[in-house]
Length: 355
View 1 (cartoon, one colour):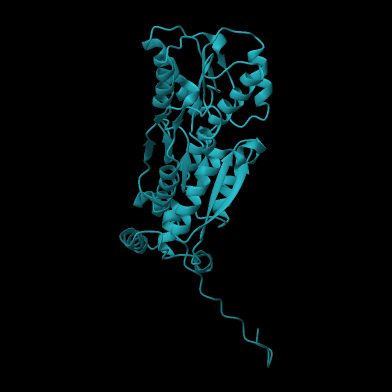
View 2 (cartoon, helix red, strand yellow):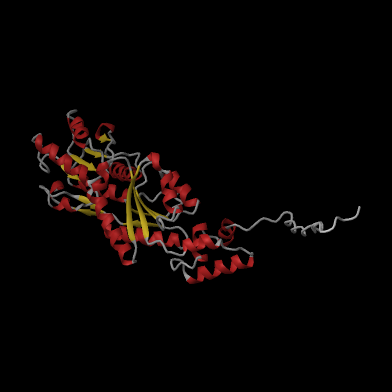
C-alpha cells in the first residue's frame, strides 16, 4: 500500500539494551567487607576517605573495591564525607538512679575527657529493654560514629549480635569469655576474693554478701567471695546472701528487711560502695557499731568512701584507666581492628570500716 504524502515514516526501533549477564550480581559493600575481613562500616568510612581509618587500611579496601568493579553511590558518599564527631554513650538499665551513681559518673567523666582530646563529643542516653533496637539505629542513621555501652545486665547476647553485624562499640562490664564485642572491665572475681579474704583476716567468720549474682559483674564478685570462704574452710550460708540490683531505689527497704531477720553475722561485703554506705546508715540507726560489732567492705572506691564515718574499706576500680581504655577500644572497633578485652586490676583499699 503506498505511503500517504507527508505521513511520518515508520519509527525505527531503538536498539535493545544488552541483557545483564546471567549469574552476575552487583557487588555490595557487605561483599567487600567480607573479603577484606572488616566490618561494612569500616568499608564505608574507608571509601569515603575518613581519617578515622588508617591510611594503609583505606588503600587496601579502595584497591580491593576497584579490582572488583565496586562503585560508590555518589549521593550517599557525599553524605558520609562529613565526619561524625559524636560518640554515643549508652547506659543500660531501667533505674533513673543509675545515671547519678557516683561510680558511673566517674567513668563518664574520664570518657568525656578522652573523647575531647580526640576532638569528639559525647551523646548520653539511658536505654531500657524495650528500646534495644535504638542502639543500631543511632549508628545507622549517622547520629554517632560508634557506641560506648555501660553495663551488660541481660544484654550480653544482644551485644554479641550487634558486634557480629559490625556495629562499632566498646562495653564496660565483665570480661566474659564468649564476648564478641570489645570489653573493658575490672577483675571482679579477684576483687571479691580480696575483700572477703581481708574480712576473714580480721577474724570475721559470718560474712554476708549483698549483690545480684545474676548480674555479670556482681556474679564474678560473688565467685571471689565464695572462693575466699572455701579456702578458709567457712560454709557458704544462703541466708547470708542478699540479692540486690545496682541502682535499685528500694535499697533501704531491702537492707531493713534483711536486718529484721536477726541473723548472726559479723561482717558484710557489699558489691558496690553505694550499697555499703546505705548498710552503714541502717546499722547505725539500729545501734550496731561499725567496725566494733560488724566489719564492712564495699566495691568501687567512689570519692565518698573516704569521707563517710567510719571511712569505708573497698575495692578500687581505676576509672581513669577505664574511661581511656573504652575510648581506645571504640576507635579500634571503628577502624576495623580485631576485638580485644582489657582486664583492669582490682586493689584493696583498707579503711576504718573493717579494722
